[in-house]
Amino acid sequence: MRTERREAKATLTAIELDEGDELHFRMLDGQVRRIRLVKAVAWPIRHGRLPFSDGEGLLLYGIACTLEVDGHQVELVRRIPSQTNFTPPPVVMGMRIWLDAVAGIADLLTEKHGECFPRRHARLAVWDARAGISPILLHPWCPLPEGGLRVEECYRGEDAWLGPYDGVDAHGGLDINHPAGTPLWTPFRIDEHGYFESLAAGDKNNRWRGVHRWDDGSSWIVQSHHLIRLLVPEGQSIEAGTQYAESGGVYVAGGFAEHSHFVFRVEEGGEQIMLDPWLLFWQMYEDRRRTQGPSPLAARPI
Image 1 (cartoon, rainbow, N blue to C red):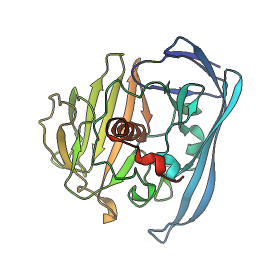
Image 2: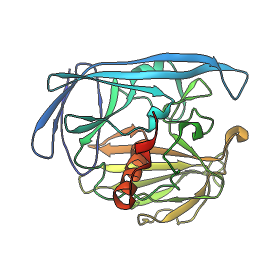
Image 3: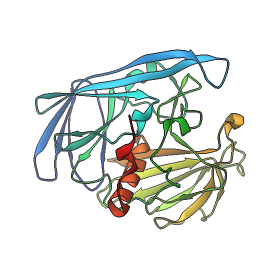
Image 4: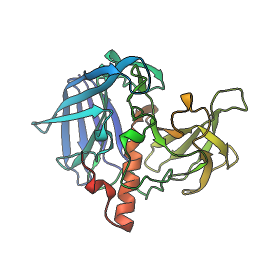
């Protein structure tokens, strides 16, 4: 049993815990919340014939964790893939806590479509609810779908973060369907960037990675795949809101839907932790609501 100590800062905190571990999280006002992971589970909900092939596989599963927060029991539950992939992170005693993943997913799915499994029993993102996940407004990464993201528009409906790709593989990213040639912009300043796989190098896809280093000591690492072309020379920095690529049209397996694949990692203290890219898109929608008007998420049925 471990005790991890973190302080609320300008960016979110990503953490992985084993059952029995505690997170002591100092809020912006100095209060310390004690969060203990009691239990983390995953379970199948529906198997059956895949709607896009003659095969069968896992269509829907659930993840949940029980937390004890300052002595109060809290249950966090998600169904994947479903519209609950795209709901606001819940507020728990002044914190937003996002249940990202649990280790039990490995008993249901393989990890052959991108790294995504947690290394401990549960992976969480935590931040003070009085602040956002970043100290700046996040520019849209791609054209934001009107009314919010829809799970049925994540490739064939299964490619939300951790969704059961082909009914067998956990999806290590978030797919958003849009036509070939769709612009991608930098959501924040990118300090360094470039392809880590490309058609020119003999790979089957154009996969890009960018890094931003925050003043609080953390770094955000983002990826986008299926790029048609990169518009900014590799290696140089890119200002926030700059179109850096046209996407959606390279190596779309099976040709079902043109899309881009998004990945998000947080690095702090020498450790990288993957998180659902939805958290970035949620903040993008929130930033539009605060600066332009009512959030489209407010009217979205669950």
